[in-house]
Amino acid sequence: MKKYSLFCNMCGREIKTEKGVVQEGVLSVEQNWGYFSEKDGEQHSFDLCECCYDRLVRQFKLPITVKRQTELL
Ligand SMILES: [Zn+2]
Image (tube, rainbow, N blue to C red; front, side):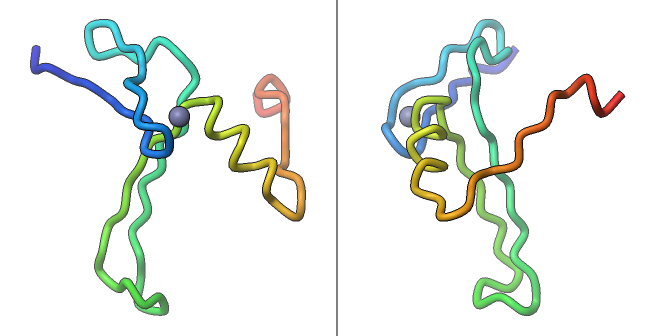
């Protein structure tokens, strides 16, 4: 299995993984910018540890939407 390490882009900390499986809460974003953006054709991706995610969303003017995943079933 290839060596797989994951880092939080915000704080630079290595995300804990075991055999390629993430062992903690992490937000992985992959965004394909489209025609109406100024980044047309670019794919951006980053990962945030849970701590940095919390810090980020606390800066939002409007709160994030939280749903219990069981409601989706
Ligand atoms: Zn972080």
